Image (spheres, one colour):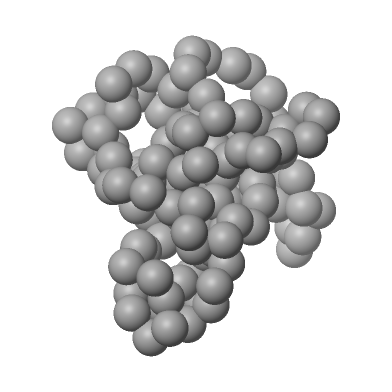
Length: 119
């Protein structure tokens, strides 16, 4: 829980309870990448996450991630940046692993494509 406690950090992958959902939102409990900065993670009651989905997909807003002992994923998956969302801290469950450094540049590019903030 936040309130000046840093219980999850940017770059960690946690199980997140995404339901209830509406329409095309990614459903169920699934691994999600914490992308919000750690100051907000420490003091805010919400955090911004991007869900993983299993398999491989090709799209400009997708980052494919190979399963590894570092990231804790049990199969190759992709980060669906089009599903980026803020969730209440109570939805964040156990730690899965941590995203490897080689994925940050593609994540940054995909976030800029989805949000249109490229400079």
